[in-house]
Length: 258
Image (cartoon, helix red, strand yellow):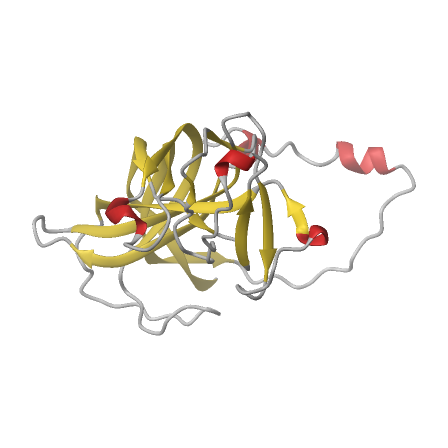
């Protein structure tokens, strides 16, 4: 009888998140600089350049904004600062950072959508062939701290070195799943009047509903025993493959786990 040891992840604790939060301001997730071109002559030329990863500043004459249907999604989940809880023994806390991305469309008071031109140089003049976008790619983030029971530290440490893992890793690991949907979008005047010499503008805020499952896993050692058998000759399939299939026992444990 031989035995092999395997390192597996055992579920220690879990929780569910069902949250509704107003998040913002939304930032531009475009890879280049962008500029709004308004169709309404009364709106004037909005000269503010939208920089990547900076708040989306839209003209004050914007009547409404919309999120493109089906574009709102969770783009990334990061687990930050996994530490033992200073309040409860055996518990671990982690800061979760949820990132959301979506496409925005803006309209003037006449209901006409703004056109968005993107260019590599902020001093380039917009050209007709550059006007290609009706939507702006944007994003928001949400932070949440959770605390789950991770059990006491075992007296014996198990050090494994799987590909991509850190040597000597002994802390529990958080596993997070999430889905989200946009519930409301609002345009708010920007704080501090957008600067003393700059045009007034509006920022974008999104009320999002978040559904998430958070699990705390700990690496443990599992021993699998098996008998030593002499390798047999591989048999070929018979001509009637259905006859071979009928001899296979139904895997009840796979379909009806206890």
